[in-house]
Length: 304
Image 1 (cartoon, rainbow, N blue to C red):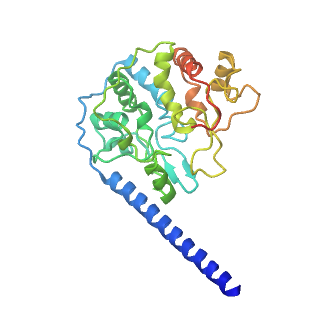
Image 2: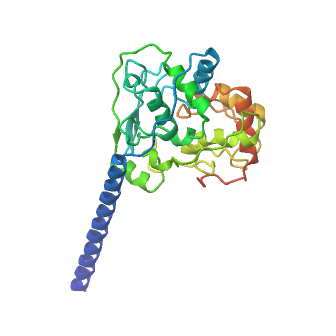
Image 3: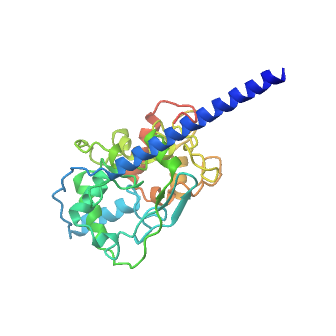
């Protein structure tokens, strides 16, 4: 009996070693594929874009940078675009939005290169940007991209150093499994030009705005824990009209969430949600996003 137990134990040990070895090979392969993809140079030409000095265009760019595009928030490039705060996302990554004023990276980029990184997620050297959610705003019409570039160029030069950016092994693996997006440019169809309706308080326009929500709430917008994130990162809510989501919400409840960060049940929204950007959505954008969310099929919580 003892000999049999020893053989069983030895067999289990061998199986464990094989499984761990296979797992290690899988992780190494996925991490290597991520690194290779990040080294890819994309053949995407620079757009024919030049900044505008028109006050209305610049005002539009300021609005977009502070709301829809989410550039000017603390977890992105900071309210002055001089660099955001460092975000520690456990085993996924450490990320800091860089200084993009003319005192930082903005000085190294032409207007056309800024437009390309917004629309295509491609840096000056032709490689993919990391983690910047360009895939969520790649639909922006050319006029809006020009407006953002024009606004950025009006800002004072800030001499602030850029913080750390580290893509960790688990983050690389989950990126390759399409569970998180760190390698941005490979998620964008660089040949596609979206036909975007003019801004209107409709579900049709809201469908594009809702792309801003998918990174946290999932493609189905039903929430659930973001894969690989530590317990310190809050679990995104279900924002479909399901009983576990916003089925009982009114537009006024939704507007209060955007303005004050307070949910229907009276609880305060976790600051992880970029409410500082969403509260600056204008009346048309708010109503459009609401109409689209209400048009979704009810989806139980967690079916990201």
